[in-house]
Length: 289
Image 1: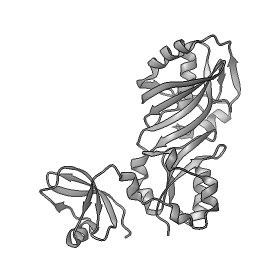
Image 2: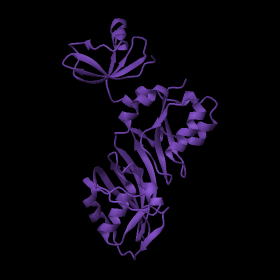
Image 3: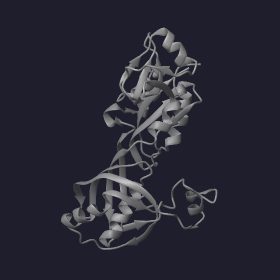
Image 4: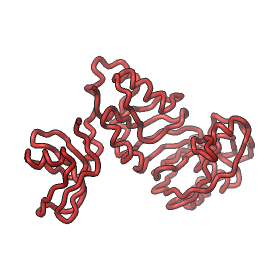
């Protein structure tokens, strides 16, 4: 049985679930999940959790993400990216300085109306299912946070590259659409590459083809504790380890408050735990039962 995390550099035209389905076959493991869906147009960092490591997905999916996105001005589509049907085209006479000024409106906490081509459910139906039938329904704006938004370069008369660091739930194609609207000429996303998710970066990612061709793919898996690498380590002696394995809390009055990666005496990663007022309790356990 395989357990661990593998960071995939998702290829274009694959869905995130396509990647997971392929890895289920490679690792012979039904329990596989990912941290943050990437649209088929997108490439880049897709953290995939295998086996017992899927218990960490809930933490990873909440984290902020970073993207490099193509912004094409003067074009609006029904999907808010260049894969969709063109709804409107307008001439573009925007300077870099004007674009830079408008970007300032989209930094910090903003409100986005989710696109119709998304997996959000309204009335029990996924929006993209309704959109494919030609239906459009009212969507409530949602608060998201744009931690940073920078103009990297101009790549054509109406094409730009943006770097976006944002909270969970942000639609970068909607950001491109809204920037175009703010400039008065319309816009859409022409490409997307995720450069960071769940704390993992592109340099941590492996091309999917390399993983599929590997003779021993399990050797490519990172331990699930790699995701919690920013927490300090706490190593327990055997009696304390037994208590943690039995779901009990520990009293360790000399240990400072905070979250810890907790290991057994032999180096087995046991749990992500919280120390509060001298008492250690398990947030989530990761040892085999």
